[in-house]
Length: 356
Image 1 (cartoon, one colour):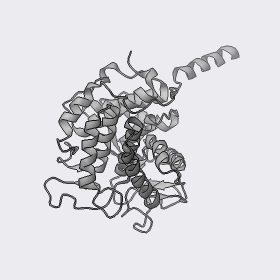
Image 2: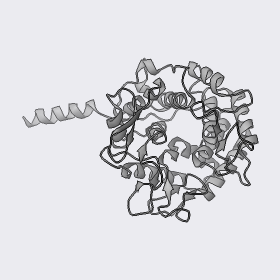
Image 3: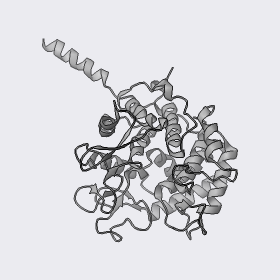
Image 4: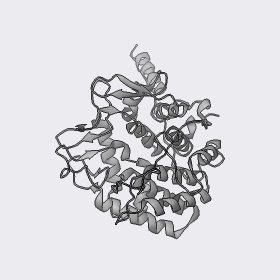
């Protein structure tokens, strides 16, 4: 009996075994030939190189420019990459340092009304420049990427924080000096797949330590009945908690956490468990209220379904649905961006889950 019990347990474990992350395949070219990129470029990238957030009043931001540059590298589309990078330099690099202003509004003059940066946008642009160096060998991209990476390391990383190295969301407004509950972080700003690449540009900073602290914080920031992280997290006390003055929601920021884990090849089931508990078996991925654990909204655009599908692949080896292999074009910027990034993760880290 004992033998059969152990055998049954082994079978049960095998049925829920996490996917084995494969050695990283080059990100550059990973989306070459994917139909979704052409639709994305035509729908969201202007002739001048501005990436338009269609679900947010047509604004542009450093995050979107970085996503556009990354996807252009993944699609091996150098002309579009250079166009986006040229617009980004001209319109967002308007501070007195090498960081990017976070928001550009077409109906305002000046279009940049807030000179604060967003560290995830800076990080995405830097990562894209590093990938472009790998893909096309352009030395000016290495120089530009290093300049941004050094500013990030000097000004946005807190190397000796109580929870390990921390990434401030912006230069102003988030530190312990700025807020009573500070520092405040956003765990979706930990762009895990970027850290190895950015380390090659600015090795004097502890990017690996930042990656480790991010994973620890994701495991620790489990709030309310659903055990989910809020978008904005206070680290001013002995334990993480939802930050003051922000909605206590698992929302549009935090949904990127499992995406970035998978893009970095992370396959630890426990890190994905709260997200999958909320999302699986539901009519579309959901957002949630932290205090009650109740669903606060459903993400109905089809591309959002790529997030739970990728998380299930990374955590359990669940096959990625064939229906999600080709993104539908008639969607907004954000879900289609996340879908294309999920496909890149599938191709570079978890191809065993990919549709045959």
